[in-house]
Amino acid sequence: MKKLIIIKYGELTTKKENINQFIRCLNENIKSKLSNFNIVTNYDKGRLFIKSLDDNYDEIMNKLKEIFGIHEIIIGYEIATLDLAEIENILLNLLKKENFQSFKVDTKRSNKKINLTSIEINKEIGSFILKNVLNTKVDVHNPDLIVHLELRNNESYIYFTSIKGLGGYPVGTLGKGILMLSGGIDSPVAGYLAMKRGVKIEALYFESPPHTSEEAKDKVEALARILSKYNGSLKLHVIHFTEIQEAIYKNIPHEYLITIMRRMMYRIAEIICARENAKVIINGESIGQVASQTLTSMRAINEVVKLPVIRPVACFDKLEIIDIAKKIATYETSILPYEDCCTIFVPEHPIINPNMKKCEEYEKLIPYKDLIYQAIKNHEVIKITPNKKNDYEDIL
Ligand code: ATP
Ligand code: MG
Image 1 (tube, rainbow, N blue to C red):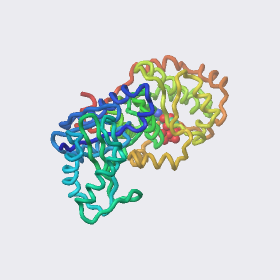
Image 2: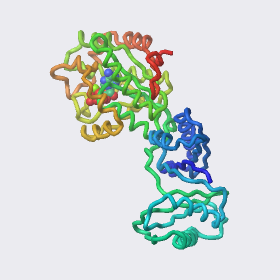
Image 3: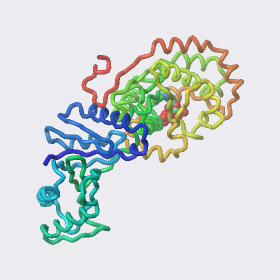
């Protein structure tokens, strides 16, 4: 008998055509997440198995809780036989460590060559337990213990409990997106939700020194680091936005500052997508939250790009977004007080219903193509990994 972890895929099994690619990607993501552990994985269409050579299953479980595409995580036992008498003997030993007054048996039999049906096996194992374990009874509705038995090709598996995984699709199976990551509450949550649907992300941050501080950038790095737990290592693109922002501030009517600034951000995001082979832009816009997020504003801003813009929190209330931010532990970092480049140049009366023709007219007042070209040329890339090893790691 061998202890091991059994992974159930959940939603993946509904994607019949892509399932092999999905499971292969999940296996790679698991191996990369557990690269410091001495493990072996193998899988088929129904289950993925992880054996640890060092028996540190609790630590491994904690890491697996950060991987999308996993529906259930189970610590179980593999027995190299399908023979019920042998299984029963081993089961009896395992049951000695369990404390229960009622139980039921739940058998799954993917090997259809076995003569007995699942229900017949439940009955057989059930009466064996009743005969050999004192003071217990069968309770199919609310048992203290469920004895799960899975009979597969040449092996069987026993387990008693499972914990829920994160669900979703393995990160990377749906391609790549560029997440506009500010230091706020919304955009890290947007990134998390996009990763949950299988999108691998790279982050894009616009900084405006000296109007924004080094601390504001550190904060974005810290947020990117939290997101990298789910993404695998993550590229953070930092765009020096000062010249563009100052040109807008000096030359364009102030009620249009935010609208035009965001059009510039979108243009740059689309160029980064093209360079990084990403299919979509992702951001933390939420309908109605601020002037630049009315439907008319969104349309005027969106107009400058062709790529789809995914807004995972578009229809969430702020409180719902905060709940997720707390759950994924970005909230505490997001509420640190450093200035964002948008907050510094906020006009007193930003326009709620910008006119697209006017946007185009005003943009002619600044050499924005040259400015964007320069910004892209000078942009900085920081490699973010889940655990910072030392202060210089990012530039090594
Ligand atoms: P957040 O809480 O994510 O900062 P917000 O409610 O403050 O969002 P805005 O400042 O209007 O909203 O920004 C909307 C979205 O635009 C952000 O969620 C983010 O995706 C993107 N964004 C804003 N500022 C920046 C920035 N400096 N760098 C990168 N992306 C940004
Ligand atoms: Mg913000």
